[in-house]
Amino acid sequence: MVVFHLLLHLFQVAIFHLQLHLFQVVVFHLQLHLLQVVIFHLQLHLLQVVIFHLQLHLLQVVIFHLQLHLLQVAIFHLQLYLLQVVVFCQLQVTIFHLQLH
Image (cartoon, rainbow, N blue to C red; front, side, top):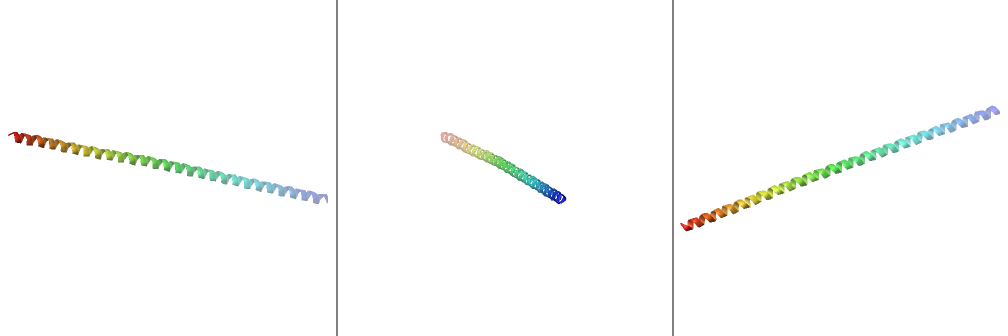
């Protein structure tokens, strides 16, 4: 009877240690999975931040080039207008001189 109780106790101890080991394995895998999820979300967030900053930079570049183009167009039109004014004034002076002779 004593041997039976000892064997029963050893069997209970073995089952307890197996359950404890399985619990530790489950907890380890859960922690590992949570760490993988956290790392994935951090990488995703960093990718989103990088994409946002690239889009922002590209938008700034596009706006700068549009402003530069508009400035070039404005300068061209101003030069064209001033040239027309100069030609008109020269024409007026020529007409005035012709009327004097």
